[in-house]
Length: 140
Image (cartoon, rainbow, N blue to C red; front, side, top):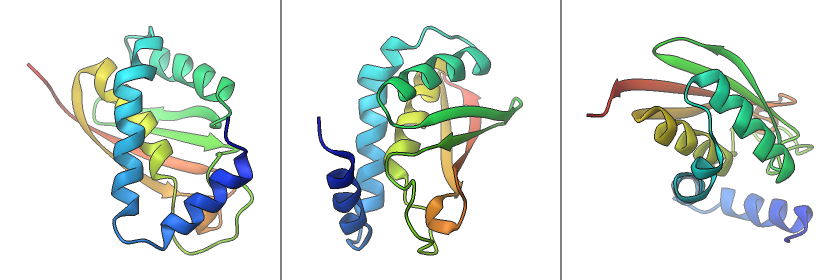
């Protein structure tokens, strides 16, 4: 286990490096596609979110809550996010790793391409992270 403060310091340092956001998202996404999605049994958005919430909470990544969903979009909040919880407003969202974890799981379980955007974060002055997941057509 890596102490949470060490992870946060490393993450804050990577905020300053160009390209780190994409790397963190990709790492989270690949971990999710290879590991987390295997642990999620759900087949629809609600079930997937429930299963993923249980896993993320056990791993101390954060507390996931489904806010809304329809055929084109899913919105979730992540409370007590391991990356940003308690940090000051730096003017931009920084939880790309968590976005990758969440997005990768939905992508595998729903068999759909998607786009993930973090719209709210401690880094933008909120007390939670909000991720909007745009769903595209099903893969064949």
